[in-house]
Amino acid sequence: MTPYMSLTIHYISADWTLHSKCLETRYVPENHTADTLGENLKFALEDWGLDEHKLVCITTDNGPNIVAAVRNLGWNWLNCFGHNLHLAVSHGLDRDKDRTARAIGLCKNLVNTFNLSWIRRRDLRKAQSDANLPQHSLILDVATRWGTKQKMVERVLEQLPAIRHVLVQDRKHSHLNPTWQDVSVLESINAAMKPLAEFTDVLSGEKYVTVSSVKPVLELIKGDLLSPNPDDTTLTASIRQTICRVLTEKYNSPAIQVLLRKATILDPRYRGSMEDAETLEEVKQQFVQELLDLEEPEASGEGASGESCSKATGGDKNEPPTALPTKKMRLSDLLQNRRAHLAGQAQDAIPKRLKADAELTKFLQEGALDASCDPLVWWRDNKKRYPLMAKLAKKIHVYLCHKYQLREDVQHSWQHCYPRTILPEATED
Image 1: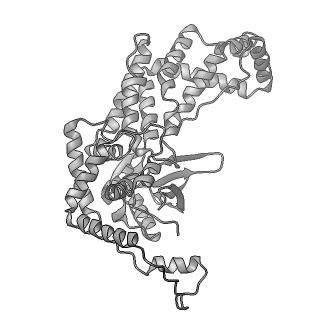
Image 2: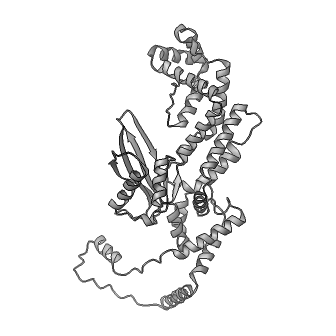
Image 3: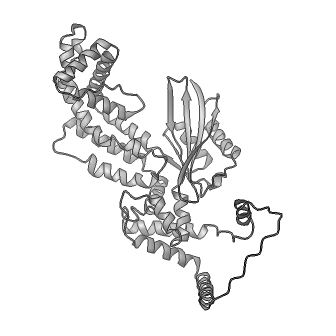
């Protein structure tokens, strides 16, 4: 293996669009201890001029070395949902390892037997046609992608009549024909895993917010998709119970629970619907304090904005500004200016704590959006209604992503998408 470490940042631009940029891939030949990984992460941020104090969260897998590195750096940490789901499914299959390992091993041997012989693939296509089955190829699983295991099992079950027809005429490989016990185990495995097939990809998006959906998705998995069903076999029920238990344990940390609560509440699709009254009040007080701690925006003068306007219009900053024609003032203009001035004075007179509390209360009282809506679009359109909370929402919903990659060659690569962190705001310079 040739060890590399990649660093990718995710950030929200001024127009509330989520961006992803891979900053670097560096060669790290030293042993990947917690100290080594921590130093490289810290150096990477410094090399790119990123202030680690503005980093809100970093997401990694559950490797002890990278978890310890983040802990030693004192950064907030959130584990990767896809990796957690992979571990949960693996633990579920290990509950009855003798039966599941035999059935899945049989599937792999079947797939390899057909994939390595064009004659058997030809015979399989003919058997599929005769049995009116879809002309699908068999799928081989990838050890680090639990979803491919489910797809492999599902495809073997779909094509079982055609597979049996071909193997009956092949004495050398007829022993690979699944027994009824094997089929029963494969059906139980598929029934347990299939409801989760889409979640790894759905919660690994780079163009839309995902952290605020982790808590709702966990509730959906435990309370609906993997809830006990009287029609489940004993094996299916055992796998599902183990998956739910492992996922719950992975998110039991108080720090992770606080982060997920905040992200979910600030998502207009959920608001306070996932929390009880006592927890919601506790998080609300935390939000108010964070809003009080937010820096006030600097007053805009002739600096950057004036310079950018000059450049945008093609003017020379050394040339004197061109005088604009004077517009005759109307009574309505005078009254409007006076009203705006008084309104500004009134707002300045209100303590910031009251403003923060009023914004938060108003936000929580509004109805939740449809689940298909984009929360970033909503915040972009409503940032003037919630000027303080919009800053907090942008902070919570941004990520910094660190990818830790071990690579030997193009044919053999192993990649984990670990971190996503929160930098308050970024610009595309």
